Length: 192
Image (cartoon, helix red, strand yellow):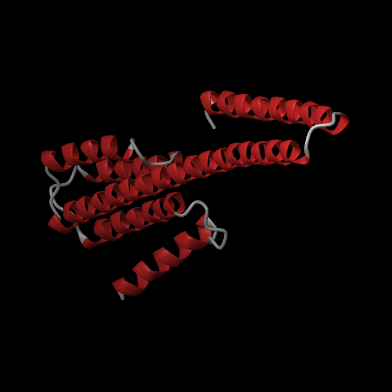
């Protein structure tokens, strides 16, 4: 919650306290005087209306703030998903070519810049591990099956961290080691 919103809510709460205090004093004065009953009823209705309007305003204000934060979270999650999907697609393109060119290295550097906007520290570390392994393999002109398998294993580890980042509020989440074991074992099955 921003400081402006807190100050605004405090001002409204102070206004409500003043209205309640004034209402009590006026009601007490009306009860002690010989004013007709209609005066008391009108004043009580006005006081009730005013307090109801203020409470409704406060509740709607908080609901609007919560909805805006929710919408912002959804948009950010969609952005993350699109960046991660693009990342995995481009990594797939680089690996399936079986040849590493200077353009591939530049592409990976640009990918690093893109994911740095949305990725968690874990994803960036996993991507750096992938890039480090990938860079180690660039000394060769072409990639053999063993290197491709190793690159795919590194890519699978990266996918684990991407999943954790996207579903960070998921309480049923497996731990990282278990996810890595599962994904790597599926890669081994595909190799058979």
